[in-house]
Length: 403
Image (tube, rainbow, N blue to C red; front, top):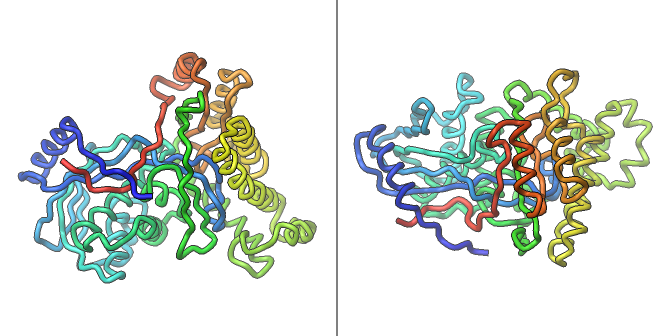
């Protein structure tokens, strides 16, 4: 399962070196990379300790790095203010909630809890995983910082899954977002993998050996143009309502409750939790089972069956999970429009679905190669030039790059 090494290109190194010199007045010593991720299957299943199918993609966040011999981490991301974190205080800071310093402090804090003597360093970062792209720029950044600290100060002792859990800890406890573990795991581990999160301390990660390029279809991510910024409550409600259902059984998450047991209590659950919560739980059980079916379809080479399952996933998210249109939105239904356009330009072929958290951000499409040019042109014409990204699966997760 060990991925090949990743060599930094001359162009990327030159850009990072110039940025580092401008920011810190010195030359960097080492280079790191962490990829964005795409969710192939398992929409909103990870936070219920369910199953997912996900892959690292060929867009990444990279950093030029140099230890600075102080107790301060300084990270300059291209186009953003300098982030400074003093390591004397590794507790959550209220004023840092929803900021980059919160993620840095959280990652450093968790490494310190694990016995790492975290030191100061300077880093200059550039990213092709754009914020709001649905490819999880935050997870890529968390994995990047974790990979840097792991190599500089921990002798590489943290495994890729452990770095993922460190990133999730930072996002949950310091940044203030109740995310699951899929994004960080896919970014940290790399390649195409299926993950079972039932044992949250030791998730089962298995590679899925499949080359999408051989399927006759391109993997596309389409930016709907909607902004995540005001939708934190919508994302939190999905998790909260599923947990409310689980709490009715005295459990923490839905994977601890048998599907038959859940259905037997539908009348009482509707009364206690409301119909939307029940519908979201129905989505979870169906989607969680669908992941295993998708993995089997890919492993057996039945891409037609896989596409049918992608469509089922999309319909389930739309109808049952209800994470396409934010509650009460009428004038702006960006994700719904993007899905309608994708179905139009696919003309009954391929498949499309809401991607990631939903409500805003992106959709995913598997587009037959003979339709790709017209599909991209149509989506870009409607949603803006560059809205449609054609992606590849990246073998490497979070890594130190060779020069």
